[in-house]
Image (cartoon, rainbow, N blue to C red; front, side):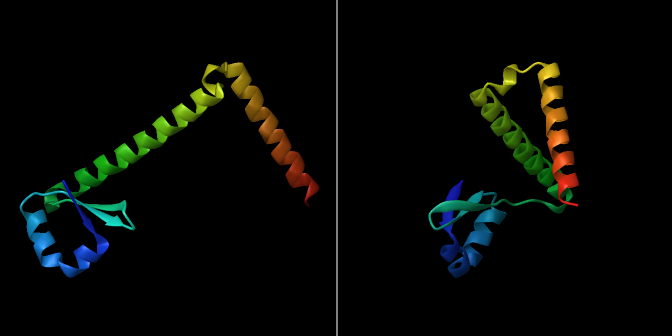
Length: 101
């Protein structure tokens, strides 16, 4: 895997497309930060590749949420406590909506 800037991508696109065709994976950076991933994807693998990327993004989001709940101590809540929180939030939302009508 190699890194190229957005400027390099514009200026040297033919060279970068060639590298992609040869199987390289390229990370495009913008302002020094990763911005996009370029990978050679045969047409018959496009849907599977997109599903894999989306699945990993989803898994990363779940891991982030799990870490946050653990840091807040919320992972130790019982189902009764969870249900009570949901009921309270619904009550507050309902009462807030009714007051604004």
